[in-house]
Length: 159
Length: 232
Image 1 (cartoon, rainbow over the protein chains, first blue to last red):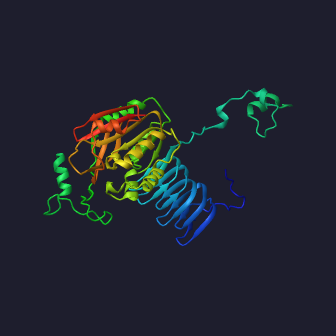
Image 2 (tube, rainbow over the protein chains, first blue to last red):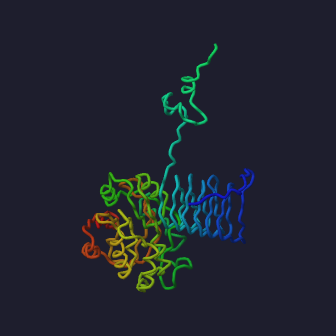
Image 3 (cartoon, rainbow over the protein chains, first blue to last red):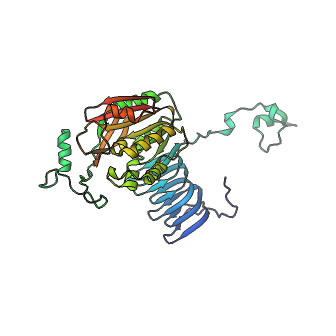
């Protein structure tokens, strides 16, 4: 279980963060922007809505969670992607993968399990989905009563 | 192009006859080894063993399947599209790392133990099905027996194993293949070069090898392969 600290800055769509070849980080990495890893990481990498790319010189001993994960280098740890995991020819991955889609090139070394989990389809209109009875919802203190509930008890007066 | 012509065109280089030549630096000296085929020749091949394998598990979803030929896009797509969870390892690559290319080097108990821990370190009764493909062909007796014992441990009762063995017991080297599942009865087969065999197999020796298993079924094919389905 993890929680993103409050102080993570807002994502800047123009930038991709990079951990250089000569950099080693031991700890937890949280990011809201795309991340390129060319160095060494031990710990965890979490980037719920962004892409994490482990470059050819990247060496990661960490669990990786992201929207999309692309691996050119070496990863020892579980990989979880809400969208896609892409394992390239020279990559080496030891760990379990949970993702909606996976692509693996011939020549890539992979040892672990693959669990494909398609995202649940979202409903297109929350208001149209379940027409609730007007009377039963009128006692609710929720901020947005449905129009049907409002007209049942608040008929315009003096008109 | 006939099959023989295709292989001849791959192995004939210049004026040389298709004699064994040294592999690249990874092979130990003194071990004649044909170079791996550079061209990928994916030949569709009907497989009765594969057909039987999928027939045995049809109608079930969420099975845990161990594919020991290394992860390939086709096998991942096919098996996960059936709703199964796939576990993958590359046993041939691991054998090379642990023991080198020559099966006669597969006798060290410590290395055998390391090999088993690297590839089969799962709780007992984890798997509903195992795809060995042709990897057992290249295991020497000590490694082979240890691997089969370990498989018996990690496979559930009534789980199925599919393995391929050469029927040609007069050669010391046989082709190594990659097998990609095209559909539930067809494989795409690509030759990966020649490798020294670890063992000579016949039906009797295979029944003895899988003595701890409930049932062994054989399918002979036209291309010198014996397809074997084993039930735990």
